[in-house]
Image (tube, rainbow, N blue to C red):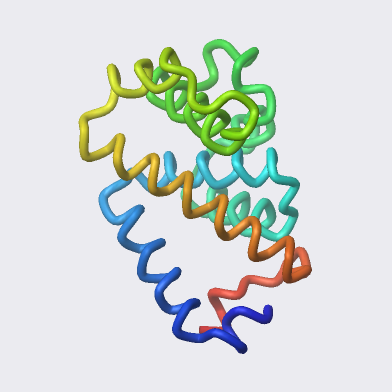
Length: 148
């Protein structure tokens, strides 16, 4: 919890960037991005927060339980969700192999340009939040948003 306390201007800028990155994105899709990136990064703080948010949005708990195995979960995720989850995996693991052309092209083929940009920005933002929460040892179950 040190960034909001020690660097409030940076924190406010990150919150503004978060809002801008997801302004027109379907909230359910945004939560799937946040959960998947948080799984890959091992961020329990963000997983707890965004799983709770997804349930409040009405996402099927079975679907939430299958995000970790989205590639094998045929018939559970829509084509848009699958393209976005694939892009989330590639961008979150960008140091492994970059973002393969086929992954980006699959997302670009199914999303309009604005949505694609928001998806990429949303993936970048949750990866930033994951790093802040993990580095700051944020406790699972706390929702920092309630402290603003």
